[in-house]
Image 1 (cartoon, rainbow, N blue to C red):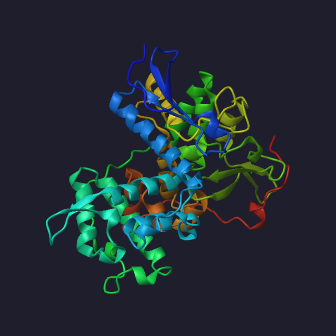
Image 2 (cartoon, rainbow, N blue to C red):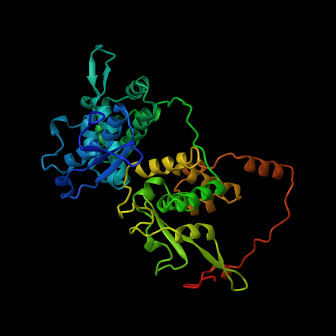
Image 3 (cartoon, one colour):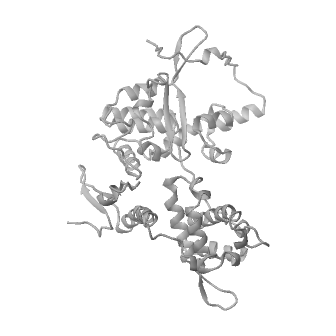
Length: 417
C-alpha cells in the first residue's frame, strides 16, 4: 500500500529497518537526452507535506531543463522591456551562465519566476498588477521594497533575501547590455531595499575526537563509505554535496600524478584542491600529516570510482541521501546530532583554533571570499582563552616552527615504513 500520495517521478521502498525511503528518479526518456538531474533520495518516513516539498525541487529543476531544451523556448518579444523579458534574457545570457554554476541555476529560475508571478497593489489605481508584466523602467525602490515585503509576509524570509540578491545581480549585470530599458534616476532599485535582520540558526560543530570515533565505529560496522565521508568533511573541508556527487575519487588519493597528495574538487566553487599527505623534514624523514585519516581510508573497500559511494558503486547523488544515512547511523550508534555539516564546521573551527592566518585557512578550504570563510569557525572556549592570554601578554612555551622550504618539498613515491 502506498503510504502517501506520490508526486511526479517519485517512488518508495521499505528499508531493512522497516522505515520507508522516498526517491525521485528522472524518466529514462530524459536521461537519454543527457538531462543533468538523474536521481535523488528524498528522505525517510516523510510526511505528505515534506515529500511534496522535497520532490518539488527536483521536478522544478527538470521542468526548467525541459523548457530550455524546447526549440520553441524563445523570448516573447511582445513583452519586450518587461521584468519577465528581463528574467528570460538574463537566464540565457553569459552574464548569468558564466557566473552561476549549473547546479544553482534552477534555484534562480524558481525564485525569479515567483517574482514575475507576484501581484502587488498599484498605489495609483489600487488594482492588482503582475510584476512580470511591469516595465523594467517602472521598478522603483518602493516597488522593489513591496516585492521583498510580500515574501517576508508569507513567512519566506530566506526566499525574500534571495529575491533581493538575485534581482540586484540581474539589474547590475544586464543594464550595460540594455541601458535604455533601465531607470536613469535609480540605477539599481534593489540597492535601496533594507533587509530585515533575522535570527539565523548557528550550525553546530564536532571536534576531531568525535569525528574519528564516529569513523572508527562506521568501519567496525562495515559502513566504510560513511567513515570516509566524515573524514573528507572534517580533514579536507568538503561540502556534503561535493562528497555525495563524487568529487573525491580514488584516483586522486596518492595517484600516479601525485603519490604524496590527495586531490579533491569543490563543486560549489569549481576549485581543485591538492592537499599534501606528507613532507620531508630536515633530516630527510618522511612525516605523515594525516596518518589517522589514511588509516580510515585504507580500511574501507573500494566499491566504485569515488571514495564515497554506495556498495553497488553508484554515487549517493545530489540529494540528501548521504546526509540522512550519516545522521541515521549516528543516532543508532550513540553519536547524537552528528552530521556531515557539523564535521565540516568542526574542521573549519580547528583551522582557527590552530592560529592559522585567514590566508592560510582559505588556502586549505578554497573559499573565494573572506566573508564566506569567516562564517564557519565557531567561538569556542579554546579560541576565547587563547585570545585572552594574548591580550594579557601570556604566551605558552615557544615552539620551533621554522622549517626550510626544502623540508616541505615532498619526494614523489617516498613512503614512511
